[in-house]
Image 1 (cartoon, rainbow, N blue to C red):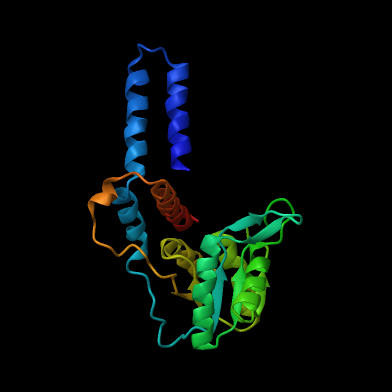
Image 2: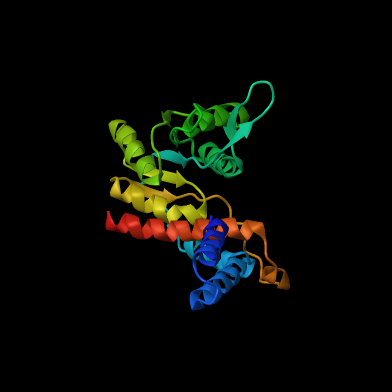
Length: 235
């Protein structure tokens, strides 16, 4: 996350460079200023918004979607006498959107998300269980092997091509959608965006000048996506 990297850089500078060295004064101060800026909604909101606008949400007339592809996010560990895992908050938001779309369209659903640590079930397996149990939406295909978004697209395309499907809805967060659509395009599928609802359409207020931990997360997501987009375009 951004705070960890900046704090590490500042501490390393203070510990490794002589106090009289110019960088020993400038770099920690610069890290502190940047750390504060990245924690402001005034910074994080526009960064995320730059990824969320202009998404192709209307399918091509000559290639209507034939299936829904739901991309997994994170999982949450469960405690108690039988520790396990369940879908996390971001994954749950995507599940809700996929369930809504599946009910409205009647299209079959593919869930995609690879293995987790500590021997827990794959994200796709947990999503399939939740869609069936909590939303009463059947899942046609489960893709439990992909380690990342590029893998989501490659593995999903392999399964769907075998079923004669070439056009799909892709369900994920709007800030993740550009990279996902690029990956599916490179995998040879016609993909249309079905993002989760946005919740940042408020006018700027003075509260946006107050630091928030959530803004660090949002800034990280935005920077991660822009870097990922650049990398995918080079692949």
